[in-house]
Length: 320
Image 1 (cartoon, rainbow, N blue to C red):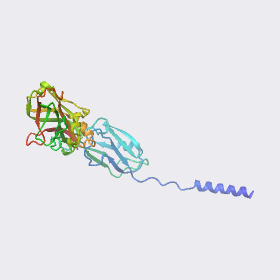
Image 2 (image 1 turned 120 degrees about the vertical axis):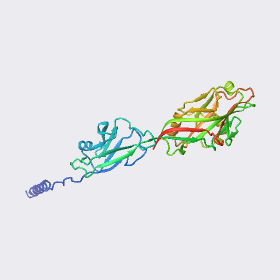
Image 3 (image 1 turned 90 degrees about the horizontal axis):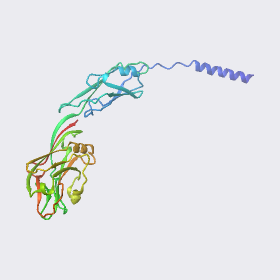
């Protein structure tokens, strides 16, 4: 009996201790915004951006979503969709892509989390949080061919990368050549993100023989030969054309200036910036390398080593 009584009193004391424990302190700490994506002042934001707000604690979704605000088209409350990555992370997805700047001037977007945003206990923030970010701008730039890299390569392995002219076609001994151009995209300030237009301009120096009739059209192809033609030698003649490419071809060689549009090629180089060292490179060749008649049929253009009218790549692009 004594043992049972003791156990009974112990259970009663335990029940009393649990039942009379003090209630937890109410949550009175106001929430706050820890960070946003994009961050305040961030530049070069892409048009398909999703906004992310990181809070200091779990939030009440209804009052927090109602506290979101923006006045710029594309970010206004009726133009976005809300989602929660977790209880403290709000993701805001614009229903349509944002608009970039139409020129070199900055275009800023602003969004606000008003202080009415509240946590699960109903505590509002003590102050609103404002984030401003800048989307891409529309810029123009002109690049000149890299004198140290452009030139022409002959089928006998000779590389001519320090001449004021570069040429394509065949010679009197049926050795043929192809011309190569290189443009350093990193010379643009700032670096491009999205290419709108890319115009390749070449100035003809002379035509020998009748290359268009005997060798077919002159073709401008997108290739990558890297930091040195000397390194490749005759192997440069066998380089595969890069994709995507919009090949240019010229049947009429009578003009002085030759224009070739290559926006897809340059965008591909931007998308593969690291592996192509931020360069756009091209090859000029005729459809047929040689006609075997042992007579010269060739065309010569000013190179990057010329004192005037070097090859140009004229760009319109979006950048930070």
